[in-house]
Amino acid sequence: MAKDPVCNMNVDEKTAKHVSEINGNKVYLCSAACKQQFEQNPSKYGY
Ligand SMILES: [Zn+2]
Picture 1 (cartoon, helix red, strand yellow):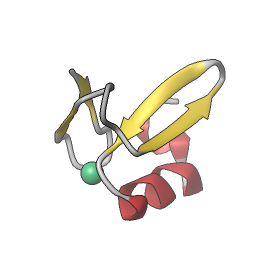
Picture 2 (cartoon, protein in one colour; picture 1 turned 180 degrees about the vertical axis):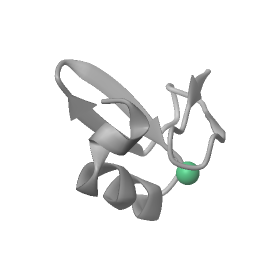
Picture 3 (spheres, helix red, strand yellow; picture 1 turned 135 degrees about the vertical axis):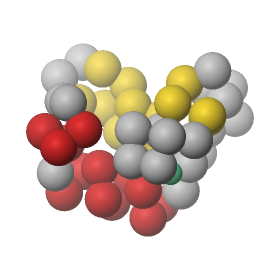
Picture 4 (cartoon, helix red, strand yellow; picture 1 turned 90 degrees about the vertical axis):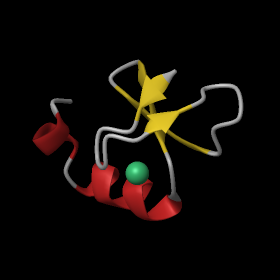
């Protein structure tokens, strides 16, 4: 299980629809809104 860094929700990697790739890391997000928020400021979430 991966964790959405934006809202701290658990996200299943197998069924995740919202995945962002940054510096070779895959980041799983629960929704398009969280993905957008993450990509706007990844350093805020430790990336
Ligand atoms: Zn989320």
